[in-house]
Amino acid sequence: MGISWEEKKTNDEILQKVGGRQLHGMLAKRKLPYFGQLMRKIEENLEKDIITGTIPGNKRRRPPHSWINNITDWMDMSMDKIVQTAWDREYWRDIVHRAAKVCNDE
Picture 1 (tube, rainbow, N blue to C red):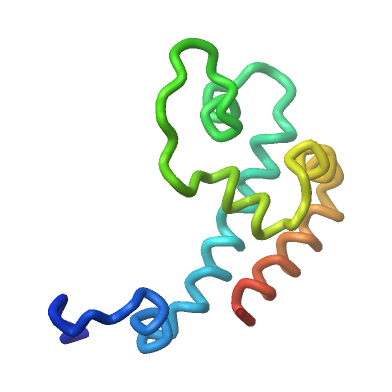
Picture 2 (tube, rainbow, N blue to C red; picture 1 turned 90 degrees about the horizontal axis):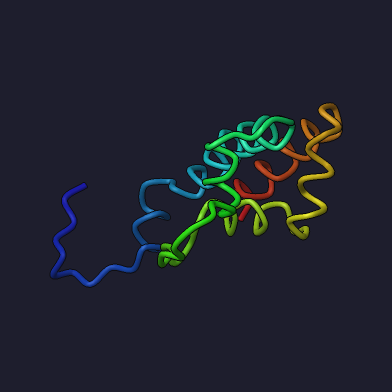
């Protein structure tokens, strides 16, 4: 890309230069179906516990923006509503496509 750190460019400027807004849509299109699949699992599942942050034990500091934050931002719903929605696969698939499109359009 040839951008020096001394140029003091913002992340948005860099993303705009490389067409990175499409990156948000691509991430949403990959993360949301995987998240839906995890939420539909009935049995206890370590991956599901990690993603939802329900692991018992010591509370550790989370990164500033976690998986759950991405999912709730993209879906514009509460976590409970998202989990309920994930059980309806056809509806979930439609929502994933709409959310990915919105992320690309931003």
